[in-house]
Length: 328
Image (cartoon, rainbow, N blue to C red; front, side, top):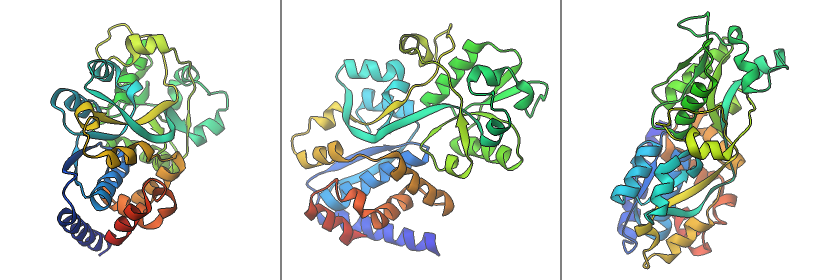
């Protein structure tokens, strides 16, 4: 019943907004496969639609293919949440060619990715603090296929973090471990949840902020970051000779095509995107609600707008805020 009511509300909002004001025109927003982006992309969609009269829509896709499409085809117009440092030459070349750039900040305190182990493993083995420490103990992180070897759980293809995990694993060159890919964000979450519930050891690629790390406390393994090596090889999928290297705290930004940022008819939309910025704590609250209610990104966006006005009303003028409130 809850999902039905939300769906009816969504239909009402879409129809009402579309008829209200169309001078902003069409705006497409990339929607990726993880919760924070799904929530943030849909918040942007609803605010741009209800508050600014845009015909805003989301376009589903993974990170690298979407950013590539923005650069090569000019669509979608916006990526609400992206990490340029994880995109390697894809983003760097596009930015240097003047086809894509940063239009705003997505999460003010950034994102941190890495390899994570369950908190109960870290507590039982306080000597394990770094990636190298963990890789010295394959028996604590056994592979389901071959328990004589340890396993590192990799994210799905199409994620920048998945490229980094593959290059880090290759650089470590540890024959006592295997890398285990997952086919989707849901599959990655499922592997972690299952291991946690069975109190098994696991090393998994993950990031924060996420609702999963609220449900299942994990500890990020430490390792040095070399920016030169990162640019040379760590973030480059086809680089053949990576050295062990790790993530740093990543800047989370909003990207747009140059064609979109050059539009002179929507200065108020550009100003919204420059002003709008989340914190990790704010995003985590929305993601936790989405997880607990098995909600999608649009459900989460509407819950956020209804329940956290103290956050988003700072992003828009008062008259725009009133339009958004009236649409909910």
